[in-house]
Image 1 (tube, chains in turn blue, cyan, brown):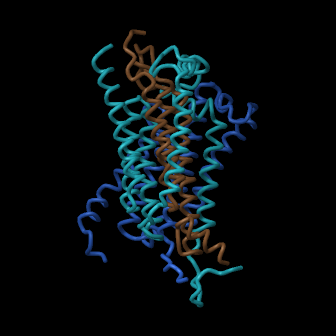
Image 2 (tube, each protein chain N blue to C red):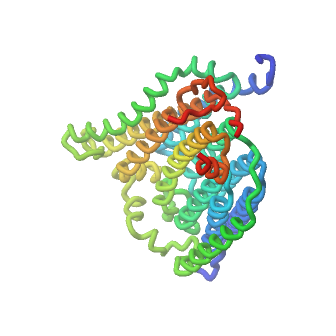
Image 3 (cartoon, each protein chain N blue to C red):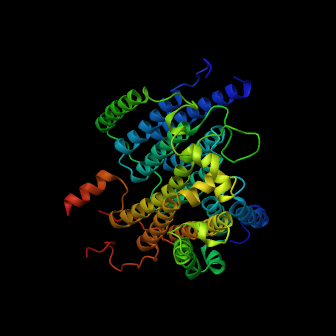
Amino acid sequence: MMHRKIILRIVSKQLIPFILLFALYVQWHGDFGPGGGFQAGVIFAAGFILYGILFGLGTLRRVLPSWFTRLCLASGVLIYSGVGVAAMLMGGQYLDYDVLSDDPVHGQELGILLVEAGVGLTVFAAMVTIFCAFAGRDRVTPRKN
Amino acid sequence: MSVDVISSDLLNVALLVFMGITAVAVARLRNLFAVVMLSGIYSLLGATLYVVLDAVDVAFTEAAVGAGISTVLMLGTLALTTSREKATPTARARTAMALSVAIGAVLIYATLDMPLFGDPSAPINHHVVPRYLDESLEETGVPNVVTAVLASYRGYDTLGETFVIFTAACGVLVLIGRPRRRKTDGTGASKA
Amino acid sequence: MSAYAFPGLANYWIAIVLMMIGLYVVMAHENLIKKIVGLNIFQVSVFVLYISMGKVKGGPAPILADNITIYSNPLPHVLILTAIVVGVATTALGLALIVRVNEQYGSIEDDDIRDLENAE
């Protein structure tokens, strides 16, 4: 198995770090250019999905154990709703980022950054989880009638 | 009107026509592998169209999601099921064709009242959008208006969407997350 | 506005034609994967309709910069951006259901499944 698709394997091994780096750029540069949590999460997941397609689900699961992706899946949503609760605790309304910092504009920037991080984490984990669920399923031979 | 505006409009219509050709090919082909690949191409053409229509964030998402992840998931499903479709009964195809033509005619009739494409005086450009465009930079410090509206002005909306994604992933895990336990009898599925 | 009105309403019309092709695929075909592809076609054409409405002639992408006064409408972009990602998540759920249906019935053709149901 290891000697097959050698060009694909080597080229994608070189590419995957750049895909992940690009995803991080899209995540943190989304305030200034096109991008944001949704896109970054998908691109980050695409890097790992490429890895999984070429090196097998077992190898992918050694890099990203299922407990880890499930943790990411839940913590992304938790970060998002947590920002809302934090705003309430600091005297504002739910998801009102103005109160997160002394300066409302800084508060907004911080809130948007955290919320986008939560979105990115959930989207990334959801895509990897869904891919692994499909890849890990065995093919069933059709039932004879 | 300048040349680049006209050429971008021509490009826009050309891409839409390509999408139409791809969609017709999807409807006619019975090899599901080809259908899935064409649906990826359809998404990619859509992403290009969004760039022409200046929706760069949307184009980005469509290229990564529609052309990338969806295609992978559909290929995964083909690997688990079958890649050949049975022929469609003609009577059913005729009924479906008549129904969709009728609905399409009604919808096209409804567009006759709509403002022309690209019209800056259309109502859609005058309700909340001027506020987003004029004040979002002072209020949020984020130059990308799409990000500002997405995460701040419409934060509730995006929170809901994130929960939908979370729930969908949980649903997939519940449905096919666990490797299937092999049945010893030949009949396969249980009749619990 | 100048007299130049191309493409006028044509964008909406082509989007509606695409929508109807998607609807036709969903209605006419028995194969469940084909139905999902049809739904995808429908979904993308609805997105095209929304994005077409948000385009403003001569307005660039809504990323604020100096000495630009007119922008495309950001609101449809926001709505569709989230809809795309939610769309793929729900598509994945539908595909997972198809995998389970295939395991249960050994077929992904709607009429075969109905026959099996009636036979039982």
